[in-house]
Length: 115
Image (cartoon, rainbow, N blue to C red; front, side, top):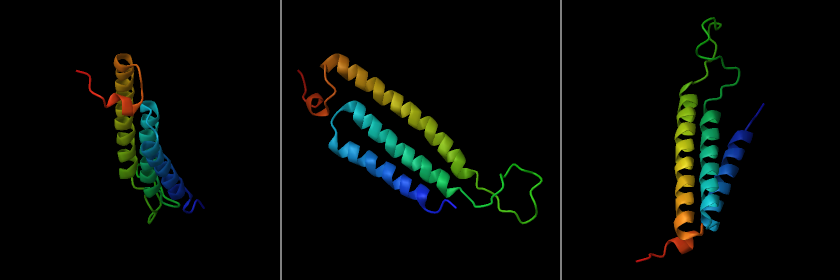
C-alpha cells in the first residue's frame, strides 16, 4: 500500500537538512537544517516499525497468529522528539545570545575572536 514512499521522504528530508547545513551560514537556518535531519530520522524509525496488517501489542484480544507491531521504534521516536525539542530550544537560545552580543547571525563573522 505505502511501498517505499516513506523511505524516499526520509532521504529527501535528510538530504535537505544536509544541504542546508553545508550551504547556509545563518544560525537560524542551520537550526532548521538540523531539525530537518531529526525529522527524517524520526520518520525512518516509525517506518521501520510498520507492519502491514499488524495489531497493537497492547491489544489483548488479538487473534491467534496475528502479527504484532513493534513498539520499540515508536518509543525511540518519542524519546528522539523530546531530545530534539530540547536541542532545538538550546540552539535557538544560543542564537539569541550570540545576536545580542555580536549583532549578527552569520557563522563566518562569529568565528572572529574579540580580545
